[in-house]
Length: 114
Length: 109
Image 1 (cartoon, chains in turn red, green):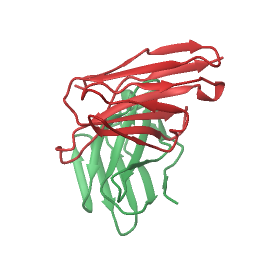
Image 2: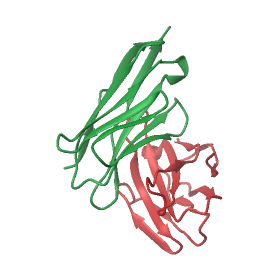
Image 3: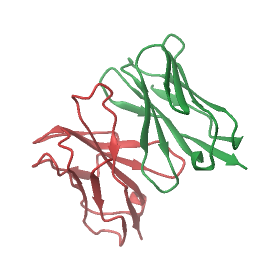
């Protein structure tokens, strides 16, 4: 049911590289989110957006940036990747008009920084 | 601080019933969610409770007691495909989701 896509699904890069994780949704949702999740751990909010040209920082935002120029697109950029950035990155969206406001997740981008 | 507590791991038998508990301490409350996450996959929405009581959806039910800061997810007629992690999340007064670490449910034949 969910139409939210992330690329790349898997990425292995060296320390110091700049990377952008792409996220697109075709559901017209106004809210979008980036989460980081390590195995067996809770999701940590990195950035979120309530609409075009709106971006807010979450708990783990200090080393990354996002943009929301179009409703459907919410890319996440790491300016200089470090081994500590090795993790699973999950993009999600939600519709503020839905009563439950549940999140729809993409399949994730698994990043390994050597 | 805000926190969500749920058991790390549970084991149950195929065909049986299992209850996964979640307790929370958050600044305000605007709803509690349960998500299912299979290994290596993204979480998918299961249920939402904002008022006290039981919400039933097929084999899955979710209960909420706001006064106790407590919820549970009840899974009936367990199937092998129910083997997954179950995430409890609470929306606080700022409409931000606070996530638990998840309960890994292992189903044995």
